Length: 259
Ligand code: ADP
Ligand code: MG
Image (cartoon, rainbow, N blue to C red; front, side, top):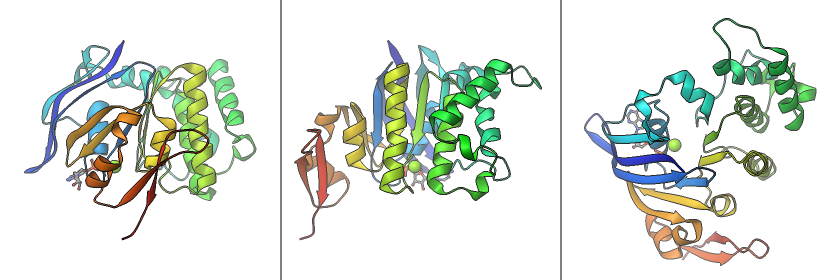
């Protein structure tokens, strides 16, 4: 089943085209990565796909319907988005933030039901946040905050999880922690995961399909191993690199090299 169809999408900021003629599809249940250099249009594309931004040209369809025609609340019940610059308001506690994940499911001004409360509790426990649930998120490290954002997304019980550079400011321990939680959730619940990743080695490990953007255009799209080729990656990222096979996982990995 096709989940997303992006058809000749284009976007301009002022006179500058930042997306041009972008077409691709995402199937339900995939682990789909979007890669490309800084400024290549990845975040803009994600915002267009979730209706956060109205694209200048083309169309995005979600389950066959134009995304622009779907009510925001209905979309929020299906799709959870962790935005790149999405630090939640700092005065809230961990559990308050996670409880916000239930809002798309509540009637206006209604309180959390017992089921909602149980769900929030389970999510806090499964991500190791139970002990710090009453702390203000202002007191947390970047890695812990990213886990709280992920917990809020989980509490939302979405069918699709969209992450924009979830590991950018995290140390390797927290990178692995966040990515392994996403992987487990994907495997156990069968949700579709769409993630923008700037780290190609993580993209190789966690995505089965990839879209490579360059200057707002699709440079390559398909199976991870088809997209991650040494020649095209070194050209698009303007850097010399060596591609090797991961000794344990067998996926491509990139080493930087200097002349
Ligand atoms: P990426 O996520 O791949 O780094 P973005 O989609 O954030 O790229 O940005 C693509 C281009 O659009 C960049 O040149 C960026 O400066 C520009 N851009 C992004 N958001 C805006 C905005 N709100 N107004 C003007 N230009 C923007
Ligand atoms: Mg971005």
